[in-house]
Length: 87
Image 1 (cartoon, rainbow, N blue to C red):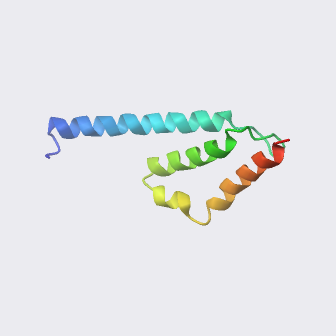
Image 2 (image 1 turned 180 degrees about the horizontal axis):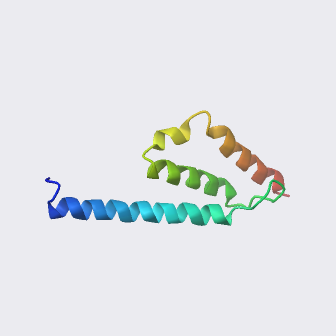
């Protein structure tokens, strides 16, 4: 498809809309997370952590990097904080 083809333009618009939705979702999830090291992590914290990481990785075109060894400890740390906060 040519760059100026209406289908190409529609596809680009759809991609931009999806990227914006992913960014808004990531910000919503991040805003819902507790502030400070002593704050308990809600039950949604485990999945929220992974969703935020994946949303930003996808937005930057680096989905594979979200699974790198350097990223996983940070995710596990948030998950442990959540688990430790449970009765």
